[in-house]
Image (tube, rainbow, N blue to C red; front, top):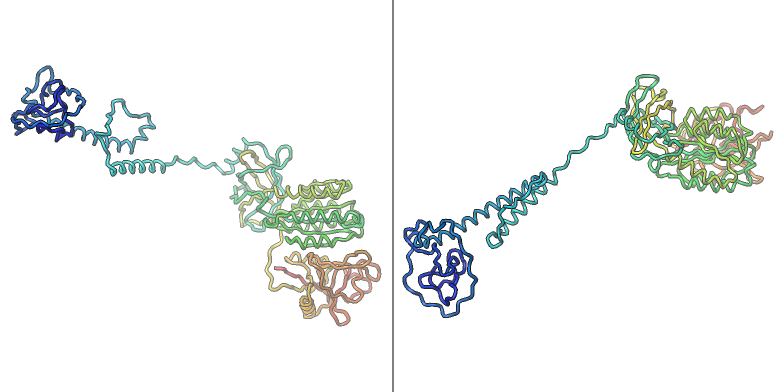
Length: 614
């Protein structure tokens, strides 16, 4: 150092002032290595020092600074690693080493810094894996002070970026996914054995989209209460006509609620005994049709009965038509419940998907041509459950419902119907539909045996089901809205055929429609055409209503009609378009006009017109 210097030009340390001295010694720079008046052996200036070449000792004095020396703390004693027990360099040799020593210390610090940085980078890249295996820092790890080690902003960002990359790569490493469950028949059956037992009750089937087969079933616990299956797994084995049992592909298993509709055929008593309760029944039925879920596909048909069976509203999702049909019911005659149930089962059995019949009566059947056993047989053939609500006990009604998978209720009041209808609806919507793929080469109406393995998080079972699918109505395309069929048939036969073709007997609601129907009949050289309507008695007069529930606003009656009874007293209630007195008009007729004594002019001149709404 130059005489009078306050800071070392190489290391930057302040020069220490000897204790008790107000000035720097001549020829000796103040140094942190000089303490207690002793000369630091590294401060000798000898040309022979191997670490200090061409260094000249200053032999002249410099003027002393004229300000009081600052009170510096004495620097710690430096222990020369080369000087032990008085041996080593002489004072002259040691004096020339101070500058080189500072350089060595700086290089050592820089080397340590580089090692620390490399170690830090390695730790950030692999350190977390080592930590997970129990590794950690040792107690002897070097600690670098902030004065000696200072990371530049770029170096800090590089370390930070390295850490982010390391963390990102670790996050992208995901644990191996567990193997999917075995959803084969054997796998599901095995898991089902460890679940709570559940009973599967077959309801019906649908092969209208064959080879896809839909099987509808209810799930009940051991107490007979309906249970919900959450995300069920189902596998099925099928055997057709006693053939080989093969596992089939299951396409879906879903509860009907909110997903699929139900076809409800409502059979209502409008016999004379219902006169005091008709208003209450109409109110309850209107509430029921209002509550159906038409968005998911619910539909309803209303068939009424007294001494005869009448269509008040064919299958529809239009509540206004259903309510109009409900309001057109008028009490009259006797009780033909079995005939009405038979008609309702026939129509429900032709519907695709889930379906049922709901009957209501206030008395015993006394007018039907069909028997209760015929109703049971037909319902089992089509797999249609029958529910009956009655105000008087009848063992036959209980037999019908229990034999077809339905239920019978004996109520004291018409108002009790509302709660029961809600219960029936909820039960139908709690049903499940399982769809699987069969063999397209086989007859879709063949008898089938299936084994069903079902399991969810709570319930499980393996069950066998035997069923024979039946034909349902096909959606047909037609060249025009109206189709005339020439045939000597009864009104009931004509009505059934139009339903089978996907339509209904024509309903004439305007002058334009009247002209079209008349022209079709005239072109076919016919004079008598069945229409889709009835007449009923309200008070002392007859009135007409359409089988579709449409408003009966337009009318073209022949003078003196409707009569509701023929001249011989035989009941007439079926609407006919006829050509009499050189003019087309309407008349109400008996069902069979071909067996009227002494009358033959209907033969060869009769037909009917089917109307297709879509």
